[in-house]
Image (cartoon, rainbow, N blue to C red):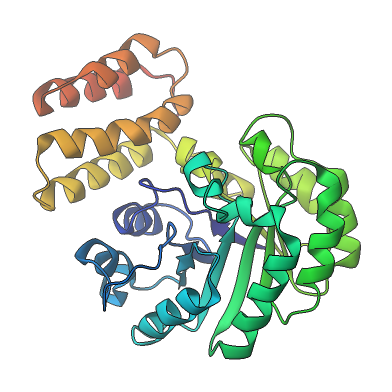
Amino acid sequence: MQYYLAPLEGITTRIYRRVYHDCFTPMDKYFTPFLSPHLKKGFSAKEKAEIWPENNQRMRLVPQILTNRAEDFLKTEEKLICYGYEEINLNLGCPSKTVVSKGRGSGFLADPEGLDRFLDKLFSGTKVRISIKTRIGKDEPEEFGRLLEIYNQYPLEELIIHPRVQKDFYKNKPNQEVFEEAAKACACPLCYNGDIFTKEAAAVIEDRFPEAGALMIGRGIIANPGLLNEIKGQGTAGREALRRFHDRLYEEYQSLGMGDKNVLFKMKEIWCYLGQSFPGCGRQLKSIKKAEKPDRYEEAVRRCFEEAQLPD
C-alpha cells in the first residue's frame, strides 16, 4: 500500500511538504495544490517556488492542473516538462463554488460528453503520464457509472477517487458502495481518498478495498501529522515531535520575509486542523487564533504544548 498527501490549497505548500517529509514518515507521493493555466509565458514567482525541484528534494512530487480546456492543459504541461516532471494530475475534484461555476474541478463532471472530448484531446497530445483526482459526480452518485466508462477509455496512470459528489463538499459520509463498484470495474490503478483520520479508518479501507493500491490523506494528516507513523505501526507522535514540526514550519515561513501578519495567518490556518490533536486545550487554541503579534502567538503555542495531554 502506498500513501499520498492530498493537495490542500494554501496549506500543503512547499514549506509544509518539506517540513513534513523531514519530521514524519515520508509519503510515497505529494501533490501540489492546483495550478490554473494563464496567459503568461511562464509561471508566476509563487508557482515557480512551488514546483522548483530544489524546493522539493527527495520527494516524489506531482503537479496538479485545474482546467476544462485541453489546449491550456497541454501548454502548462510543456512548461512543467521543462522542470523535469513526468506525471501530471488533473483536478476533477475541487468542490469550490467559484471553481464549479466555471465548469472546472468537480463542476466539469456535470458535462460527461464535454469531459470525454477534453480527455480525447488531452491524451492525443500529452507527453507525460496523466492521473486524475475525481469525485463521483456533481449532484448524484449515479453519475459515476458514466464517468467511469469515460475514464476507462484512456490510459490513466492512476484514478484517485474521493467518493462524494460536489454538492456534499466535505459533509455526509464518503459513498463506499460507489467506490466498491469502481474498484471492480476500474481499468487503471486506483487510489482511495476521503475521511481517513485514524489508523483504524485506514485499516478498514485497506481491508475492504484490496484493489486500491494507494490511500490519499489530506485533512487527517494536517490534523495529526503523525498519522502515517501510526498507520505503519511506528507509534504515536509525541509532544517533542509535534513541537519540532511546528517550530520548523514557523521558522521556515518566517524566513520567507512575508511579514508577521501573513506568517501568523499561515500558522493559524494549520492550527484549524492541528488543534484536533490537542484535546482539552480549547482556551489555549482560542488564544492562538486571537494572537495578532508573534510574541503573543508564541506564548499561546508554548502554553498549548505544555498543558496538552500528549505522550512525551
